Length: 255
Image 1 (cartoon, rainbow, N blue to C red):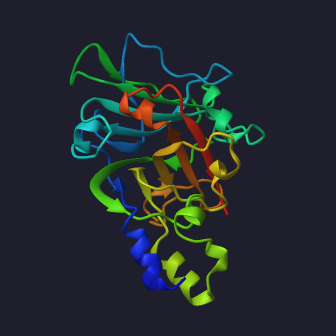
Image 2: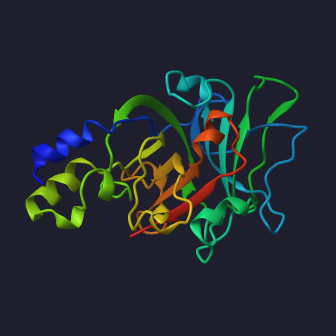
């Protein structure tokens, strides 16, 4: 298959995505969108804890009012992503991918449908005493850009929807990987992997990318999963439509 034919097929497979770009500055308010930092949290709600009873590390908070126009996602409230503060970032590599949703002591996604600014009922949650195992050092405000992206050759569906990348010539393969990797941090879209898509060998493959946090190449943005890896949270389509974030699969890999 040549470049023109692959391009034609990819144009038929766009997905909407909210690109998340961290900035070398702190958010203006505790209810803004940012990576790292501490969650804006209701005082009457229990904070997520890991298996050892320690507070989890929040790696991202999204003010959903910035997601208007992104289909299926909420357009109000706060969406927060947590992982356990341990040397595996909360992931059990020995457990099957599709069972990771059961391990709520390793990762959690919390959605607050509404929140109050400058309220006595809300506070900036205290961080874990030690965040030595977090992939993020610092707190970074975000810019959010909603756009479309095409299917990546690292996605397990590329083989059947387009072509087996291993069957391509070196020239076509180089073009594909140079132009159609879906790196970067985002909500929705297609997932990027430095190793292999864990859904490929799962019994239940119908998990959609909810959120991807990628390592940063910017020397002013300290985000690093292992050796330049990427972390991903996955959700079922029906759960996303119902804004139910209680059943989430989670994975991360690195080079």
